[in-house]
Every structure is written in C-alpha cells, then in structure tokens.
Image 1 (tube, rainbow, N blue to C red):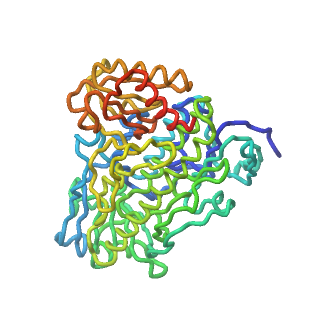
Image 2 (image 1 turned 90 degrees about the vertical axis):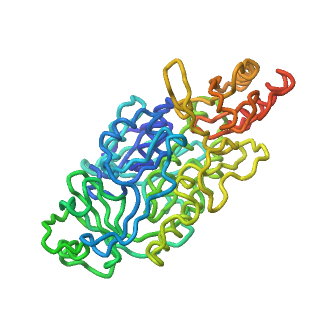
Image 3 (image 1 turned 90 degrees about the horizontal axis):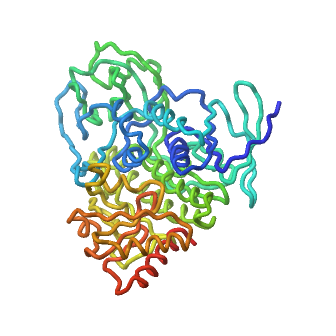
Length: 513
C-alpha cells in the first residue's frame, strides 16, 4: 500500500543527536522538516555520555539546557587509573582545560545518549514546523537539480510513502546507507582496536563514591569503566578477544570484586575508528554526525561535533529558504565542516592510541576545550582580516574573535538582565560595537535593507568588550547566526559611507550574495 507524496524543504534521516539538533534548529529558523528514524525507541545501550560546552551553548540558546541539567550525572571530571576497581588509584588526570566561567556560560554535560535524545526529542516535537516519524526507514532516494525524491517504509504497517524534499540531511549513523548509496568513501584508519561493551547495573558506590570519576581505566584487564545512569548503570569496554559466554562473570573479573551483585543490561561489539568522509555533501544531500565522521570515544567528542554540524548547516538552509541567500551558500558546509571533521579524527585517533598504547594521558595535542570550541572556519563566506591562524596544532583554547572563530563569551547587562553574548546569536546576523556605535548601526540597517538580510545590532557597554573581540572601541564585529565571526573591522572608517561599504561587503560575503 502506498500513501501520497509529502513535500517538505528538509528530509532528515536519523533521530540521534545530529538529526534531532537539525530538526530543532531548522524549526527555530522557521523551516519545516520531516525526520524519520527506523528505531521505534531509543537504544537501551548508552552509546555515548558526553556533551561539551560548545554544544551546550547551542542548547542554551534553544532553551533546552535547563531540562538537560535536570538529568545530568554528578560526575567528578577527569580520569583515574586503577589495577582493579577495589584497588587504590595509581594515577589521576583532572583535565586542565575544563571550561571556566569566563570562557563560556555553559559547562559540559554528562548524560547517557539515550537520556539526552529523549530530552532533545521532546523539544524538537514542540514545534509545529517539525514532523517526526519513528519506526520509518528510508527505502530509496533519487536526486536531481530540484532536490530529492525519497521512498519511506513504515516498518509496523508495511505502508510506503513518498517525499519530495529540497534537501536530504543524512544523520543515519556510522553505517550510513545514504553515504554508501552516494559512494562516498571514509578516509582514515577504520580499525584502531576492537572492543566489547557490556552494560550492567551494580552499586559501585563503595568504590567510587557518590560522584564517580568521568572514566576509570582498569589496567589489570586493559578495560575502561564509565557511569551512565543514576540507577547504578555502568558500562565496561574491554578488548574484544572472542565471545564472552558469561557477561556477569566477565564484569566481576574486570572489576576485581568477585561477590558483587550484577545485573547485565546488554552487550555489543564495536570497533574504534578515526575517519572522516571524503565529502560531506553530494548535490542536495548533506552528511551529519557519524555519517560524516567516526571518532574513538577518547574525550567524548562525537555527539558534540555532530551538533556542531547541524548548527553550521541549519542557518544556511534557512537563509536559502527565506530568500536571504542564494543556494551556493550551502557549498560552504563542505569547506567549513570537512576540515573540522578531519582535525577531530586526527586528534581523537592519536589520543585513543596513546591511552590504549603507551598509557599516556588523552589529548596531548590540542586541549579538549580547543577541540570543542577553538576550530576556525576558513571559507569563501568568511572575510579574513589578516590575523594569524587561531587553531594551530597543540593549542590550548584562548577565546578569539578572529574571523571564522566562535565569537567569545562575555557577560553583558541588557534590558532582559545579565546575559552572555552567546545568547545574542540565534536566528539572525548580529553586529556588535561599543558605544555610541550609531554609525555602525546605521551602516548595518542600510546593508541589511540592500541585501534583504536581517541584521540585529547591539551596543556592548562592558569596557572589556573591545579587547575580548580584538577591536578598538570604534570597531565592529559581524557574527553569523551560528555564533561564528563572519567579519571584523578593528577601527572606525573615516566616513559613514565607507563604514557602510565595508559592512555591506562583509555581509554579502557571509551570505554568498
């Protein structure tokens, strides 16, 4: 049986963090989408358990952060090495790159991926512009200059339906059928070691306390132990040496606590990989999340990077839909996100090899905060200003408003109360300047009318803003809806006409106009 044809701007395949974030952000931008996920329910296995500060900034702007904080795990950041769980600590590693309050309004979040997805799903479903269908599989699709025509299968009823979409967002995971259908190769090592994961429930409080470490490395069995749920659920990962016939006995052997009551929740095998797709887009199809890149879990960067992908893409789709930019703006998704995916694969792959090879600490290269927040877009829609590259290998994070970088956080007083500059970057381009700022604000209004692109202006009165953003008190900074700096002018031009011309050029570049 076949239903009629549904028409929608964006068809999203996959209901994990990448797909749900894409749905949520498109809705915030007023763009309709249909998300389909072949799963009826979220996986009972936790899969991932880390969301870093930059992704939480996205959730903050979307109004999701309070609900996520309500379910987060009260872990103690860092890693601890023990021979077995009952033994003393051999070594501890508390990350020096933890995000401080002066760097971000948000801390990272520790929550199992299934819990995270349930909160994100609830918020995504709260928009009239979003349709979400679970238990529905993408059967086939064809692309053309007009977009995508897809056939869907409802797994419960066996009913087929057809969708015409302008764009297809492939968020269908590491084994992406869409990526394979397009013939897009994955580049980088595909096998950094095979692991067996066992999820179990046991009260480990006598050995970990009420606030366990982020991860325990149990050197006697070369295992990793992670707390995943507040009801005493944990996960161990051990090298895959064959079938484990008795998972409970295996857990007790790894922990070194023979008489502990243990309930097995599930198990699976997985292979660590550090790969990035050869291309993140193919015509009207865009790869997000694990469909675009696979990282080993050292540093737990996978979920956050997937959300960054969606953040980059959503505002660009919205700009095209609303007539604020030509379709070629979407070409910048590849030029901006592909280098980030390759960089993160290299960093996490090296970290994983060091942890399970020589025993060295993770992230000897870029710090975790730099990996999370310090990437710099360099693309045709960013206006470079001659500043040095802001994301060199081995760097620790230093907030920078160099074009292409995440616009720095600064607490400011507004009519709505004390806010972060991060809160200003949502649906529109934003111009920031110090007082009085009238010539820049006039230039912004004129440029916005000329190009038909909404621009919101803010005069930042905090005295530290010019230094934080690398401009003089007479300078200005243009920030994209995804919070990345598009253009920066350090000083005030000699005339209002020149100010308008410079800002107009920066806005035109940012929107590929």
